[in-house]
Length: 312
Image: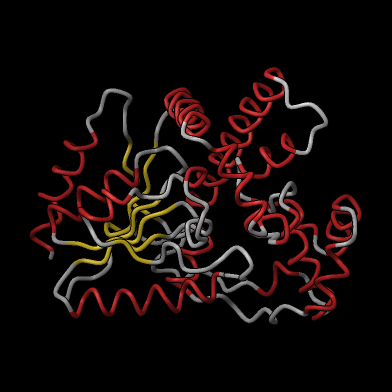
């Protein structure tokens, strides 16, 4: 049976193209491990695979829900395992590809014993200023306060929610990684993480953001606002959309204001990529694949396919 292949890395590192080409050469199907590609309509800003790419290779766990619906890591783990079993039953290779570290963790190790969301408490916390929530989090769980993305209200709300529901620090309720796949284990050859130099990754991020705005990110965001984007705190945190929403709410949408928004999206994306790298360095113990600016991703995928074929 073909064991799943995992391909992770920061945004714009090239993981989607490598996964696509590997799937073509090895007879695989791709399972998206991206927390925002599950939403229908979030296309341009999430670099969602095109119709042509999905025609080349079957993709799973994309366009699962509307903007009005909630989706979390537990749902991902259940659906991903189901997709893996179905792909294996067809004699194909499952390839999980994405940059959402928590989704990889949920797939490999489960989601821990944290309690489910409490709608009343969640609504109360969402009404509080982010600064107030961060003060409470720092006082009650300094470990999580150090590690969490403090610019992401959704994650901060969840951490404080769990603390209030259980009376225990959020950091103590997360499932530890199994030693076989954790930081002290042997690097997992079937779990690849892509690595690029800071300057190379920054250039690729800048180019991707510019392309997204050329491809209609502003118009897409306007359409999504009419479909309920602002009411979904998870989807609204997607980098690019959040900043464009702020731009659209300005009294005057000047050329200068748009340029500022584009630059802000680049900055936030670079910060996000740094957090992604930090996460994968601390968890899962992948085998790191270093890529250089001049590398052909087609050639990289072909080389990987030759290495993997004997183990399939």
